[in-house]
Structures are given as structure tokens and as C-alpha cells.
Length: 66
Image (cartoon, rainbow, N blue to C red; front, side):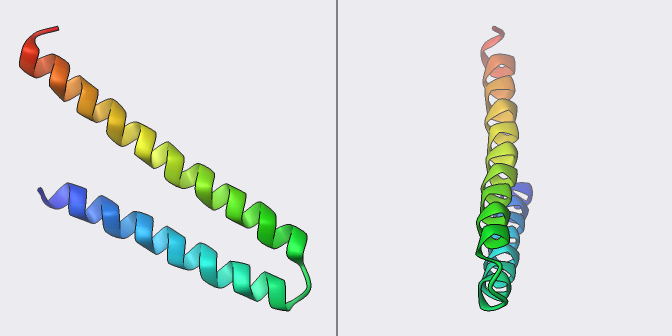
């Protein structure tokens, strides 16, 4: 159970870091960089989520012997 909670905290940490850097870039007048940074953050979280879903399906296959 703990790895899932750890993963949630990592995703939340990435979100907070992206949020702070986004605010910093916008205040500096670098809106393009803020937009790109947001996209990179979303991609990183999607990659982590896809890996987690892949692990889930592997466990389901192992349980049912597929």
C-alpha cells in the first residue's frame, strides 16, 4: 500500500514544483517558458501514470494467468 501513497506524493510534488516555477516565469514575463514548463509537467505525470497502469495490468495478468 505504501508505494501507491508514495507515488501520489511524488506526483503532487511535481505539481507543486511546476506551479511555483510557472508563477516565477509568468512574473518574469516569460509566458512561453511557463507554457512549455506546464506541458512538460503534464507529460511527466502522464508517463508516470501510464507506467502505473501498465504495472496494474501485469498484475492482473499474473493473477488470472493470462
